[in-house]
Length: 115
Image: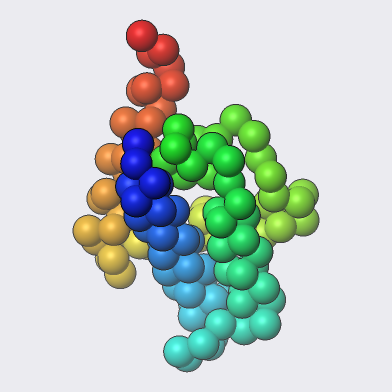
């Protein structure tokens, strides 16, 4: 995988996470246009984790990664966001959501079948 492809994948992952956090924040914290301080901190933390991920070439999304680099507190927050926003993304960003599901399933199959 080329450096440009890895960077594109990194940016796509960051964009997906930010959209999910934005959806969660709008619906649960009733914000409009901007994130509340707690969700903004989570988005920044997730972006930093993605920027420093050494496994970006071989994984699709953090949920498929064997190593979890999130601190336990932040990991629980992002799980809560994903559980809420994941099923709703198809209504707000359908192309992004379908692409995410396809890439995740492809990665899971690849991890199950090492050949």
